[in-house]
Image (cartoon, rainbow over all chains, first blue to last red; front, side, top):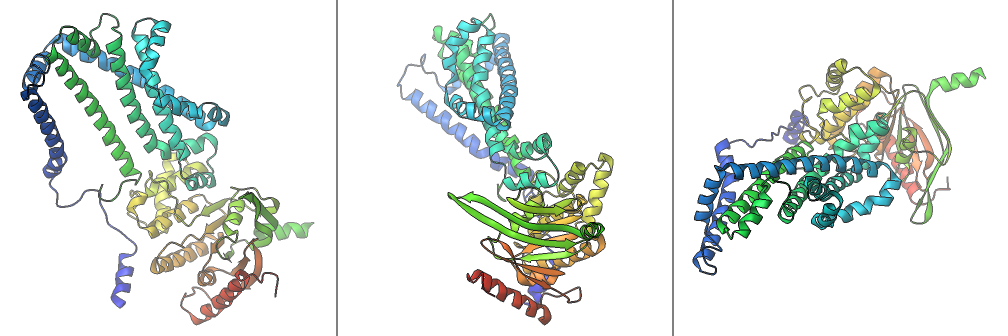
Length: 286
Length: 257
C-alpha cells in the first residue's frame, strides 16, 4: 500500500510515451511494411502466369506477365507513351483540383446555410452514388467532344465526394469542442476557422481520397469512350491497342493505370495516417 | 439606489429566480426552478447535487451558452468554463490550446507563446508545452484545461465536475493547485460536484442542489481553516451531513423539512 502510494506520487501523473516503438531498426520496419505487399504482387503474377499456362486463351489474346513487362519497359522509353501518361495526369490533376475547390465551397455552404442543406444535402449523397460517366453523353452535347467535356465528368464524379466528406466532418464535430470554442469567445467564422474545420479535417481527407478515386475512374471512362483532341492519352492508347488486338500493349497500359492509382491512393493513406495520429484517433499499436 | 449598486459590486455573480425547461420526449422537462444564489468577489462556492439536478444547465446559462426560460443570471466580468472532460482541441499542443484562448482574447501573436509558457508553468506543466493532448494523462489534460481557462483572464471560473474522472491522488493534487491559484488570483469560482467531501474540501460555502426540478435546497458555510485535508474528521462530519441531506432530497421527500 505504501509503495503503491509512493509510486503514485512520484509518477505525478506523468506518462512517457513516444510514437516510435523502441528496439526496432528502421530497415526492419520498412521490411515489415513491404513484404506483405510484395507477397501479394508475387501471388497475383503467379496466378496470372498459371492462367496463361493453362491454355485457356491463346497467347496473343492473353499474354503472360513476362512479355507484358518487357513491353512495358520498351514503352516507357517511348516518347508517345510517356506523353500519354503526362496528358492523362494533367487532366486528372486539373480536374481534381477544380473538383476539390468546388466540393469544398459547396460543402461549407451546405454546412453553414440550413436552407441549402435541406435543399441539396441529400442530393449530394445521391450524386456520390451516381456513376459520373452517365453524364458523358450530355457533356458531349453541351461542350462538344473536347477536354471540357472530360473535366465536366471528372468534376461531377469527384466534387460530391469532397463535399460529402467535409459535410460529414462538420456534422460530427464533438459538440463539446464547439462549446469550448464558444466559451473562449469564438463566434461565426472564427469558430469555423479555429474549431470546426480543423476538427472536420480527418473526414475531409477521407472525402479527398474518395474524390480522387472517383476522378480517376471518371477520367479513364471518359478517355476510353471519347477520343478527344489530337493528344494521345492513356485511355485512348488502351482503345487503340484493342483496335489493333495488341494485348501486350493493352495489359502494359492497364498496369500503368493500376500503379498510378495505387501510388496516389497510398499518398492519401499516409496523409490520413499523419492526421489521425496528430488528432489522437489512432490506437496505440496502429 | 446607491445601496443596490454597492451590493451588486460586492457580488461577482448573481442568479435570481432562474428557471429553465426544455422539451424532452414530448414532455416539458423542468431542469431548474426558481434558483437564486450569489457569489461574492473572490469567493469559492461549491454546488453539490445528484446527477441530473440541473447543475450543468446552470453553468451553461452562466457561461452564456444557453438562454434561461425565466429569471436572471448575471456575471460581472469575463467567464471561463471547465468541463469534466478536458475538451482540449486534439490537433493543438498543450501550448497551442492555451495560445488559442489567448488569441481569441486578443493577445498579440508575439506575446502568446511566452504567456502560454507562464500559464503552463502555473499548473506545473513545464516541459510539456509541445505535447499533444493524447500524449498526456487525464490529470495533465485537466491542468492544460485549467491553464486555458486562466488564459481567458476571466473574473469568474465555472467548473463542471472538473476532477470527476480522475484518480484520488491526482484529484488531491489538483485540489491543492486549484486552491493555490484561486488564492493568488482572486478569482470567483463556482465549482460543481456530486462529491460532498470535495465540496467541503474546496468551498467557502456549499449549496446543496435538489433534483427534478433543480433548485437550491440548503446552504452550508464551511469555516474550517485552509488548506483542508479530505481525510480530516471535521471535514468528514460536515460532508456526512451534506450527504444525508442529498439522500433526503433524492428519496422524494422534497417538500418536507
